[in-house]
Length: 190
View 1: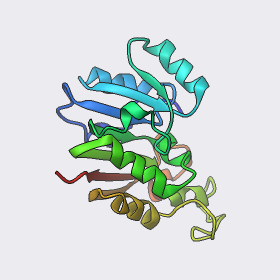
View 2 (view 1 turned 90 degrees about the vertical axis):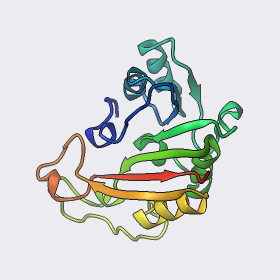
View 3 (view 1 turned 30 degrees about the vertical axis):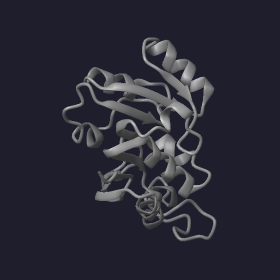
């Protein structure tokens, strides 16, 4: 999915001037370029080579790296990021939840913050008119909210806030009546 920063994310970003920001799951780079426009020293990372090519074409001056939270390039594993913005593509592409969360933590400096913006796990269980079509707790299914938050905690981050928001952009009628997005704000202890 392309697009800039969703309103729920943009509202939580303040004082990015000069901050080292890692944007995981950057896709075509539209939101990454927006982060740079807010003054961040941003690096975009995505596992999809085609998406990265689009991102490089969008803004060739920004650093774009191939990888994901589970397989970060070595230069991003040094704990220097002030902020990691993990977009929906970051969590959706995670093969191993604990390794994904550990990758988020290793990129952050002590005191650095995580802003996870992901599709809400319940949204995958609902059809276009918000009827349940799948079992939220099915074994082997996508991780639920508790598993996601627990993985972030187990990686050594301190969860400060968990928010459930409507789908954005709204793709279904009555989208405001069910959770569509999950925001997790956390920090690496000093």
